[in-house]
Length: 407
Ligand SMILES: [Zn+2]
Image 1 (cartoon, rainbow, N blue to C red):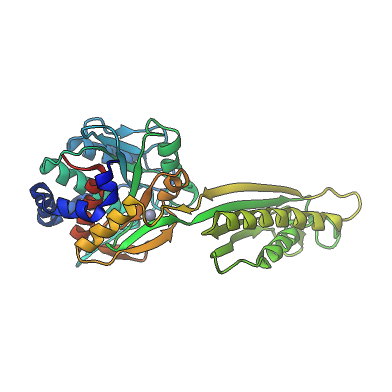
Image 2: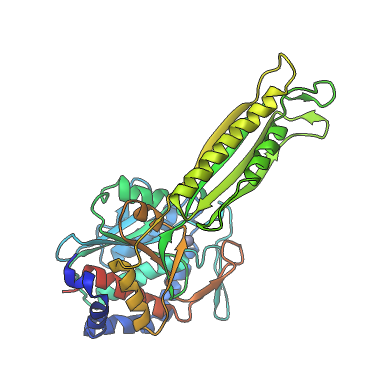
């Protein structure tokens, strides 16, 4: 990236604000409020459960093609990817939003309107980010903005939960664009002040214990998977998680057993481990895995002679790296300047988003809101209010153009 861009984000943003094409793009956002909302509604009406994003991805690719990106397509993992070529391929900036929602197949995704609110599962997380991708592309195209570097518009799959960032991971490590991305922006959720520059790391496990089972009275002494699970939970619950760097654990789901007088054959639990520090997360992770093993060993050591031991199956179901884009890096400073230039206060933040993957690879990355406001995230009553959406779009446009430069 050129030094003028990297060293003086304030001048870069001021320069952009004085450019008549950028001014027209800003007006585009103000004049097309209703159309952007219509796009938003159409996108969010297409179901996109985890591992079922294909229809929404295809629709997004079609919209990208319609607005000038003729090569828009779907990659091997299911991401919708569209290159807008600048003078040179590099610097290459990814501008992304995630296609998936937390809601399972069969959920009613139809969008309702109540006064200023749009209501639907995933309408804000991340419907507003997807709508922003289309609006940003349309503004850039209709105002004939030519960039120095290039923009890669991406709708990612698998951001939520067990998707485990699979879309962003493939994009940055496995696909055609691996090793050529210079910076990464994720538009995720509403708002105009948040700049997520730090990645909250997490590891998630499903622990399953299996035994012979039997009668609670007649077979007493057979190794009991629920008892072993209880021992593992007690061990984990005693972990001295530090407040600083903030580290947390949660047993979020337990399952097992058939009846009060039956020794269960199986028990399982899902565990979520998090820390802002990669080192602390590793420590907690090692503690939990040892706790699971020792809990099974303890239960097995007390079993009746001759009975089989419990089998332990520990499966990693989520792995999100931690780390951060330094606050003084160009992309963070550009986002701060852009926020201030629009009259808002930038707020640095830490979260778990698609940017985690980029950050863990050393690619400068931030996650920012796409404007507007929302509530009841991750519930069936999720709502989005598009008032002020244009501010979020203007901010994103300034950061994007600031990072790749305009001719
Ligand atoms: Zn999201």
